[in-house]
Image 1 (cartoon, rainbow, N blue to C red):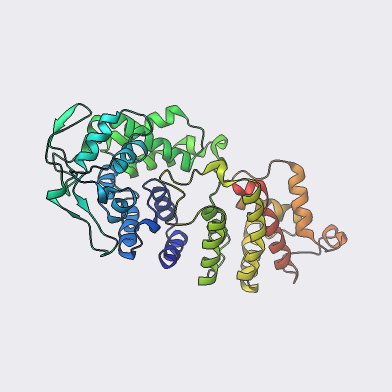
Image 2 (cartoon, rainbow, N blue to C red):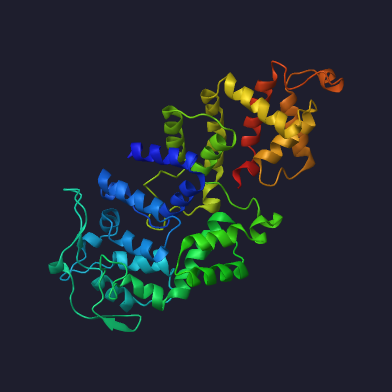
Length: 397
C-alpha cells in the first residue's frame, strides 16, 4: 500500500494539477484498500482515477463500477440474481452521480441492483473482474420509468447499459451534483448558484466531459474574484505537499514517508478514506487537535533542509523583493508569495517582520547595513517561513 501511496505523492509533486484532481476523484469514487487487499486491484483503481480525471464522466462512472476494487468495496461482487445486494446501486445514485435523495426511489435502487448483477472479482485470486451470465438477472427491470433488460454491460456505449440511464434520464441531477462538488473543491464551500448553473449547462452540452467544465471555471472572472480566494481549507496532503512545491524543498523517501504518516495522523490516509462518503473536508480538517498537530510537525521540515535549500530561498526572496535590504519589504514580499490573500491585519506583518529580524540588533536595519547576503540571512528566512506556516491563514488555498 505504501509504495503505491509514495508514487502518488511523487505524481502530485511532479504532475501538480492532475495529481490533485486524481485525489479529488479518489474522494468521490471511494474505495478502501483493506476491503480487497490486492495490489493489482489497487493499481487498476488508481490508474482509472488518473486516466479519467479530465475525461468523460459518464464513461468514468461506468468503468468504475466494474473495477475489482469497487466490486469488492461495495459488495457488487456479492450481487447476483438469487441474492441481490443493493449497496453499490444505492451509492451509485446517492453519492457517485445524482446526489442524496435526488431523483430516485427505493424501487429504482432495487431495480438498479438487479441490473448490476453478474460481475465478479476475487481478492483470493486477484484476477481481473469478469461477467458471469449465470449470476446475472436476465429479466426486465424498470428504472426511472424505463423498462428493459438493463445490464452493466462492459461496453459503456451499449444501448442496454444501465449506467447510461442515469445520464439520459437524470442528467440535470447528476450534472448539478458533480459541478457542486468540483466548485466546493476548487473555489469555496458556499455555492454560487449562477456559476453552478453555467457549469451544469457546459457539462451536459459536452456529453459530460470534465475538462470543458473546469476550463470554464478556471478562466472565469469569478474564479479570480478577490472575494473567492482563500476559502478552501487545505487537506493534510495539500498542506504538506504545497510546502515542498511552493518552496522547492527537495524530497527523499524519508520525506514522503513522513508526509504520508503525518497526513494519516491528521485524518487523511491515501487509499483508506473514512467511509464511502469520503473525507468530509472543509472545516473537518481543522479542529483543536488537528491544528496543533500541524504546528507540531512544521519543525520536521528542518530535517529535510540543507544550506543549499536555504540559499535557494535567499535567491527567491531577492527576486520577490527586488533584492531589498528592508526587512518589512522582504517579509511582505514573501507573505504575498506564500498566502492566497496575505495576512488579515497590519500587526500581523509587524509580527512577521520581527521574526525575520530575529536577534540582529536594530541599528543594522536602521543604517541599512543588513542585507540578504549576510551569513545569518538564510536562517532568518527559515525561521520566518516556519512562523508563517503556523499561521491560520496558511491553512487556506
